[in-house]
Image 1 (spheres, rainbow, N blue to C red):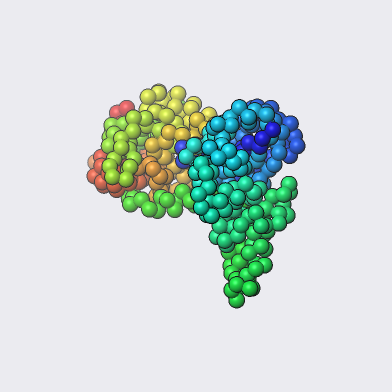
Image 2: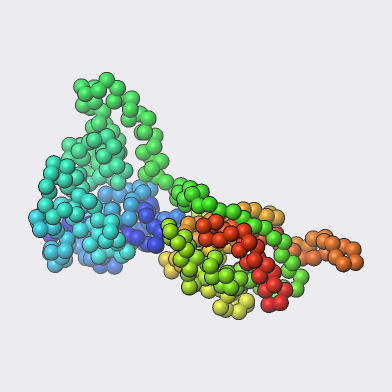
Length: 405
């Protein structure tokens, strides 16, 4: 029997890493193909990870709250079925290192592009290559591998203290500190500086994942245009204001296909589908499930879809299909009586619409003053995709749709 790596699956197009939540199996447990072995979470959703083959759970190398890049092993399964994949999992050298085939084990959503560099070469050709291969064959927590690379420590020389012979971050840093006095006068204090970062890296929560995305948003040249929308003549048909405004926004976005687009690095790529991500406040934080082509259904149907989607988001029952395909985002803080706010773009989306509170406002009319039902909305645009006048025209179209249907 050979050990086959179970890797962190790629559960969405934007996923780069996942956080291990809980193990449902223990080392030594017999598992069948399709058995749920653990749960992982991303900034979008919690998902169960199934075993791609039958065998025995040999080793666990990622612990709960560890952050693991897509394609990196989280455990190893011993199985007779591995022998059927010899030609695919090993290079010509036949070196059965644990890192071999980390992206070819058939686990759900694995990414062929994420295989480890140490096993990409058929045969080690240098000391560096050999060291990299040795590093990959040792059971270690993901961040321990990162620290080992930073500190120049060979994992094969580290005494593991973790369960099942797993090397932890402290093991690596302890090993780095032992020979240090003979080489440099001050390596002992050096680990003390990054040491507090180890648990933070290995225990990143939803806020850290959202922070990554918002940091990427800050790199986009973006601006926001605001408009007061008159809702007196809007046809609600019993629907929520969120549904009414989302319906009109999706119609307007389809009327301006140049804004239903993404910036590819050197040009604008238009999208065929109008996918509206709804920013939903849940007990686990912000999540944005997607309504696909909401302008192509009637308002009552959209209202039902929206309520059902928001309910599943708050109950933690979303699937991967609910989270992909967004071309824009709608965020509503009106229920908290927020009048207006600036919604940041979610890369690679080029637009985002913020909805303020809906309510009566005193406004000037032809014969004096009057009261109108109004809502202040803000349209944020990627300036590489559109200009201020483009945003103004889209909001004007929204107003026309609300008035005349």
